Amino acid sequence: FDASGRYLYTVGRQGTEHGQFILPTDVAIDPRTRRHIYVCDSFNHRIQKFDCGDGGTMRHVKTFEFEGDVKPVAVCVDHRGTLYVSDRERHKILVLESESGQLLRTIGSEGSGDGLFNGPEGILFDDAHGHLIVCDSDNQRLQLLDESGRCLFKIGDSDLFSMPMRVALSPDG
Image (cartoon, rainbow, N blue to C red; front, side, top):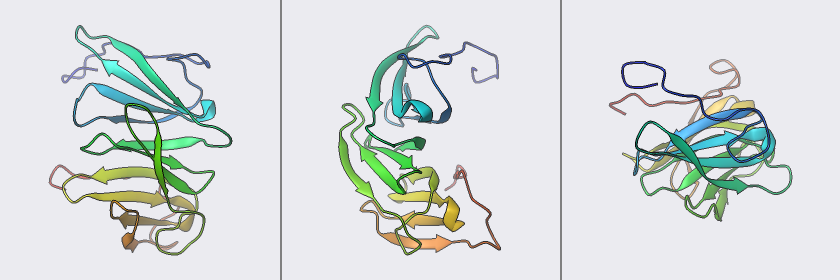
């Protein structure tokens, strides 16, 4: 869709080839380029990168494949181009380099303590403050983390949230 809401084109179809998806669960736009889009292709165990080039077309650029039982469910990109990917099944956040897809580090592990997760879902990087916000779904809370993964603040419990899945910031932060 363009800025006025007019339909432009469709990207992908069901399948396992490049540019095809099985259960796409989230998308993120690289804030540096405003033309690279990352798609969580959960049941294909990968993130796909696309380039929204000139002329209203979108082309597949790269696929970041994951080994084993990784099913990415959410992705976000910080101002440096670092990718953060929620790995719900393994209860951690994967931190990847955006050009190569190389795993730089992981954040968290399974648990209910500070900086631990139980089914992380939606994630967002707040560039203004350098914080990662994680929907810690099965712990029924949101966690605010610094760039190293240390928990700075958490909010929620079963009275406030029931499995939070996505998070967003208003334009004023």
